[in-house]
Structure formats: structure tokens, C-alpha cells
Length: 119
Image (cartoon, rainbow, N blue to C red; front, side, top):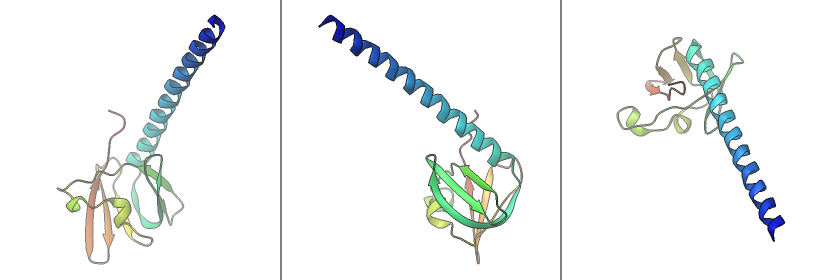
């Protein structure tokens, strides 16, 4: 009985440490993705869009890929999500270190802000 209690406590401690390690890796990856996206000057067309790392992964025709976390609220685009709106061939642009990504579809222009994962 005593041995199984010790083994159980040891397993719980190991699981807690694994959970903490995974959370730190998730935060580090999020910061890395944000820094790459935030510092990039984007002026290209979308090759593909998919959900990745609990955010949006956008592949561009120029070969670059970005993961970012667009904010959907009623003040911008009536709360329409970027991943539901953006399509292959749409034009996107954002100056480096600018807080808004613009999406252009034929005669429509959408503006999306995104989560800052560094603060």
C-alpha cells in the first residue's frame, strides 16, 4: 500500500513537471511566431490558410509562412474571423511592426489586428 502511494505521488509530480514544460514550450513558440509575423513586411498573395498552434497559419505565394493570432471583434469586420474570410489568391499586406494586417478581396478591404504574445 505504501509503495503504491509513493509511486502514485511520483507519477503526479512527473506529470506536473511535464505539464509545466509543455506550457513553457507553447509560450516560447507563440512568442517566436509573433516576433516573426510582427517584424515581417508583408505584401503578397495567400497560397493557403489553416489552423495551427491554436492560431492561423498563412502560407504566401512568395514562400513564407506565418502563424499569428488574429482578433475577431465587432469593431473590425463585424466579427468575421480571418480564417473564414481569407482565401487562396487574396492579397494581404502589413508594414513591419504594424499592428494591423490588411486583407483585400476584389473590391473589399478588411483590417485585422492580432494578439501580441510578447507583453
